[in-house]
Amino acid sequence: MASNHEEVILLGKWASPFSNRVDLALKLKGVPYKYSEEDLANKSADLLRYNPVHKKVPVLVHNGNPLPESLIIVEYIDETWKNNPLLPRDPYERALARFWSKTLDDKILPAIWNACWSDENGREKAVEEALEALKILQEALKDKKFFGGESIGLVDIAANFIGYWVAILQEIAGLELLTIEKFPKLYKWSQEFINHPVIKEGLPPRDELFAFFQASAKK
Image (cartoon, rainbow, N blue to C red; front, side, top):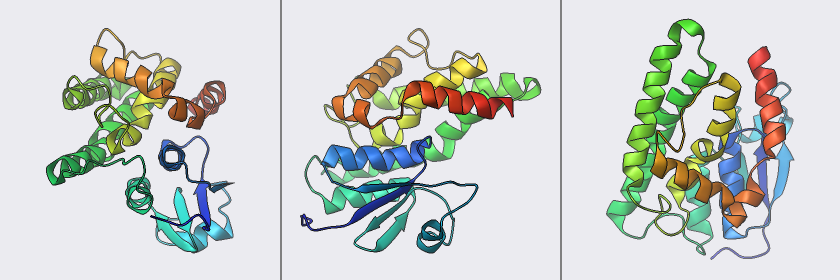
C-alpha cells in the first residue's frame, strides 16, 4: 500500500479522453494529486523532460518517477493503490480486461473517431466500421452493469470515450452511432457510467467539450 506522503502529478489535456482515464482512476482510488494542464501547441519543459519519447499526454509523475501512456498508467495506479481494485484478481479475467482495453485503443476508438471526422466520400464506409466496432464492444459487455461487473474497472475507464465523448462527437457530425435503438445494452452502460458519482465529477463539462470539438470541426 502506498504511503500518504507522496507526490502525484498528472500532466494532461482537459479535453483528452486519454488524460481523463488517469483522472478517473485516481479519483476512483481517492488519491490526491496535482493536475498540470498542458498546451500541446507549446509543450512544457516538464512534458518534454518526462515523456521525451512520445512528447504526449497523459504523463503521471509519482515521487519523481514519470510514466506515459494512459492504460499503462491506470494499471500502475491499480497496483500501487490497492483499494477499489480496477482489475479482476482472476488471471484469465485480468488478461481479458487487458485485451479489451487494447482493442478499444487499436480498433474501436479509431473506427469511431474516423466516422465522426470523415468527409462525405469516405463517410459511409467509416460509419459502417464504427457500427461494427460498437457491436463488438456491446457483445463484450454481455448483460453486465459495467465491463468490470458490478463496479467500474479497467475496461470501463478505457471506454470513457464511448461513454461520454461519442455522444458529443456524433451530435456535431450529425451521426447516429451509439443510440438506445441500435445498441441498447451499450447505451444503458454509457448512462450508468456517466452517472456514477465519481465518474460524473471527473468528466469535463459537456458544454465546454462540445464547443471545443465544434471549433475543431470548423477548422
